[in-house]
Length: 179
Image (tube, rainbow, N blue to C red):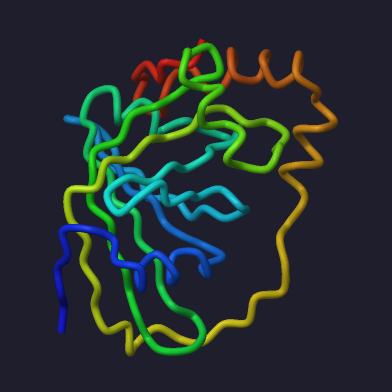
């Protein structure tokens, strides 16, 4: 049975801390809905109604574009080991960029990661858990390092050029707020 919460309980915060993968969904007013898997050590619970997610350079920048137009965001996690559980976090998100004043207040909460592009600040509206009994078991084997290796090889100047060419507009041609 699904259960709703107003805040992240200590038990839910512990569940989040142990997850190796999560999924992020956003949608603009018009255009494609984005649903992306995320990994790395990139999610932080600040308190019972706020989380941060460190976002690195990738092939697109849909979340940033969508949040400029429609701040709704959903993060979902599934238990692939232990007790079955699905956790959905519904909230309002906004981007914090390296040029923003508050960047220095939040970036050090995460490990230094090559290609860091922005941090999403998510104010939680509600949380839902559901059984997850149909979710299969999977074994975690480790992190993939290809994206970090790619970003290191590009260097900061190369990353900036990549942002200019590939990350300033969404696939629907919407601005992402990346400078």
